[in-house]
Length: 195
Image (cartoon, rainbow, N blue to C red; front, side, top):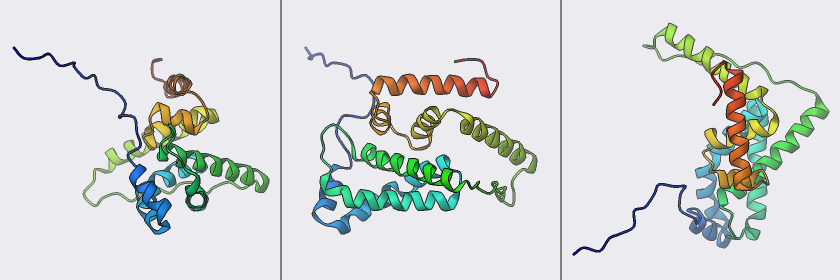
């Protein structure tokens, strides 16, 4: 007779940091940080761009984030937090500093330009899609700061509830509740039935 095996339920990714081997290598040789830099460059830039709304400010915040991470890398320890959460915490703080600096400068980013369409694209469909994207982006931008951040961290950067909690200095449960409230608020702003 065959032995019964427990059924595994789908869940968040397994505990442990998939970046840990690369972090250890980068701690031993700073040139190895390039692997982590390339892996997270687009995600950190995307997070900064969605938060700041300006290409140049986002590039600057991304550069500052990676420079701070490289300087602080020797102090990173695998003690329950993933490298990704640690890096996005640095990005979060860097972006907060950029917001404070922007407030002192009182500048506004230039309006977004329309993206160039593919040569064979349906113009009417592209126009509807672009308008819907602008509507969603405006609704996300109108969310309170903490709700906007949790939406961006989850859906743009793909962080888990646990990692979002670490970035935002909250418990995993509080991050889940905040995300739920943010999505409900976003649905209301977009005119969809409440979740």
